[in-house]
Image (cartoon, rainbow, N blue to C red):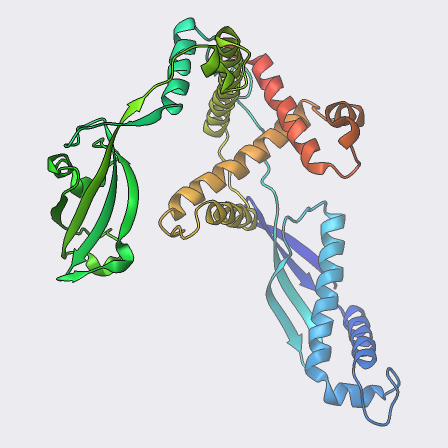
Length: 399
């Protein structure tokens, strides 16, 4: 008797075992033969008009494959629909048995979303960072702007000192040969231990302006080009100029460099920008706290196919941002992040369902204005996420 037996292999995988009766087997063969006959060309016959016996003789394997495809698509869809199973990926065929030229049974595995009840999303302890900006913070920001607006002024010094800048020409010798491709002229460097190529510090301070000095070192494993690693390298450095850094006066002229009317206007503009940055940081911090709490309270199995998709997506983004990055080296972190991203997405979805949180067309139109269209799915998802987090914050213990 034809039918399907459904069993649970795991929280995210259901196994469907199908029995195929003679009628279904005959129907599938008839349809398969019709499909094959329309797609092949047999000499002496128009398309779709060749005798069935000839089609079956020459294209037996194709007919069998077409039968399997037909039965899989029809029976799996029908079983999922009747039993309210919502696959998250195409069904995976695990067995298909034939009795001669008749299909008799087959089994598939269907991935589904895990069944769970979201919990722990009310009364979450949330610490909101302050977004106020003190005068002292604003002054520090102003000083940083001043540092960025420095200029270089030539000096009459003959020896470099820490904190000064130099202009220099560079030559490189390795293995007794001058490396012309590595030679450079008119380079500029700040004489700071954190900014100078480590093997040159502090010996570069012993050089004299106008005299070529030598600094020798053994190239480490990370040195470029790689063939120099482990070899003695000599840098020939000719300092041509020595500069000191000059900071601009904090006045209205300085403020105009940043589009401000005057210095008070610049201070006010800086404060507003800093408040916006703190608001953004507060938003990020609060969501991180909520996410951590939800992940801690809700642990469940994830569908393997969805997890793999998320991992591929993260790897793709990282490859674009950091070309050449060894993805294997960051594989464990990618897997962890992918799992957390997928898990929090499912948790938020359950919360929205339980608390009846939705996004209306009116809300989307208000948010997007003239940019609204019925296909703005991404923005709808983002707005729904915002509403879910806002709900959790309202229900939380905010400090």
